[in-house]
Amino acid sequence: MKQNQFTGRYAGVISAILLASLITVSARGENIRGEIAGTPQIGGPEIVFNPEDIVIVDTGTIPAFQEGIELRLEIPEALNRYQNSFALLIFRDITPSPSPDNLSYSGTRAYMRLLPSRTSAFIRIPFTENHGISGDALTDVLPVPVSQEQFPLLITVLPVMKGIPDSAFQQKLSITVVPLWKDEGSLTVSVANPSGNPEEIVNITVDGAEVTPGEETIFSAGIHRVRISSSHAPTVEKTIAIEPGEVLTLNLPLDYRPPEITVSIPEGAFILLDGEAVETKESLAVLETVPGDHIITYSLGNLEVNRHFTVRPGGKVRINLIIDIEIVDVGEGSGSEYGVGDG
Image (cartoon, rainbow, N blue to C red; front, side, top):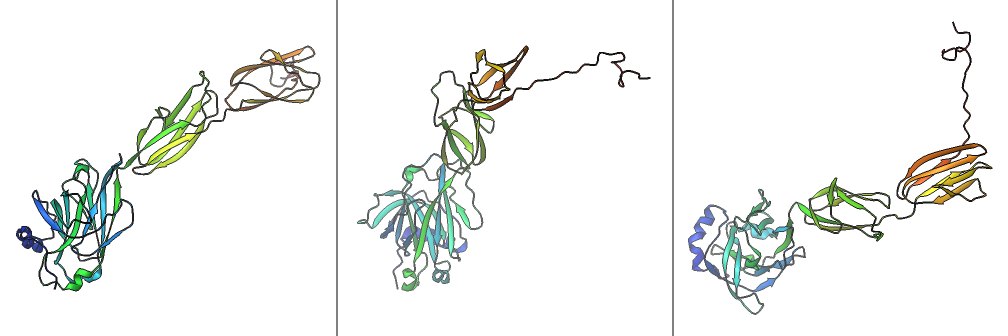
């Protein structure tokens, strides 16, 4: 039968644990012994370990939108036969630095709870006091946050009762670590192919609010509408989804092709576009121009017609030149609905 490694420090809390499965936090340093079974990566594969083994959890550099981690513990059914016999413990401020050659550590207990009589347990660990992390019937949240400086964490499952058979210590538990993100992310929007024209005016909005091109802006997670308008290119619109914790960059190209005017020209007509003659022998002329206001002049014999119009960036305009015939009734009674002889 395996010797219980719980030191005298735990004697004062064992009876309380057996009465109620409560989270406990200690302000004192405590000694922990065991072999390191592994160091799971956040978002990486599981680490398998036995009771009394040690698992080391480190965060590395914490991304801006990460507010904590969740430990997911898988418990073999065989251990459920030993209810109130094993406890899960988490320690912070570990010394010395974890090493495969070291079997003895000191740390401050951040969490202690009996293994639940089910096949899984979830523990959420916030990094700061101000967080949006919540728990439920199956998930505990540490009452005291663990800052980055207090990592790595040491995690172990230890017996709290005597008389546990050796076979229980051969059971395999597993643990995975996943990040917990704030319900927000960031978005950076840029024009992929800026024209370089100093006269171009570019305006970028997200959900109708203007943002600075190339500058990271924080948004709530969810669906957003991006719009890029330019004085020299057609407007571009795109719907995007920002996931919690996502850092998203959008480089959207603009279409700087010049606007196009298609003019249908009657035979014998003379055409001026902005005062310049349109030289063509075809009945259909396709002209490139610039965005903005224009004037087209159409002459046929003694008839001359001027029309003003506006071309949008990248737009296409079709102009049909036709000869109007105006009929005016100038006879007696022309003001009547029925004309001459009315009444």
